Image 1: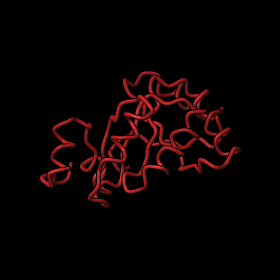
Image 2: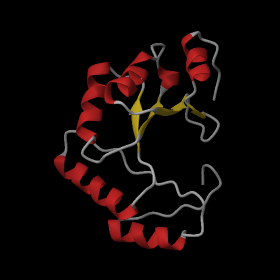
Image 3: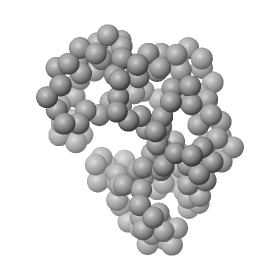
Image 4: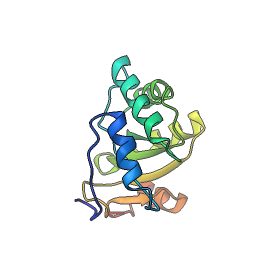
Length: 144
């Protein structure tokens, strides 16, 4: 109950379909999936099954902003099998170099949509605007 919204757990894609039917009256349903290794074919197949079951309007790939560019590109390329519409850059409070997620978004042609700068949800989550990113680069950004 981190952000004061109902929480349900789906243990299989069929469970997810049923839960989404229960929440059909909601304007927004957020689906958080467990972290998956880009090197596990089985885990990527399982994730694709959940995405197909959800029939989402938008899929966002969450990437850690504190890892090397080469690793981010590997993650993005391998998760492209799932098909996503944008990126969320997390862990920006754990680095002082912010270019990797921005470069990745440009490289793969999807927008950088959200940034996180800490563990406090929703306080540390922000829309990824040019102004917010510049504040990070210039060291003027506090928590989102």
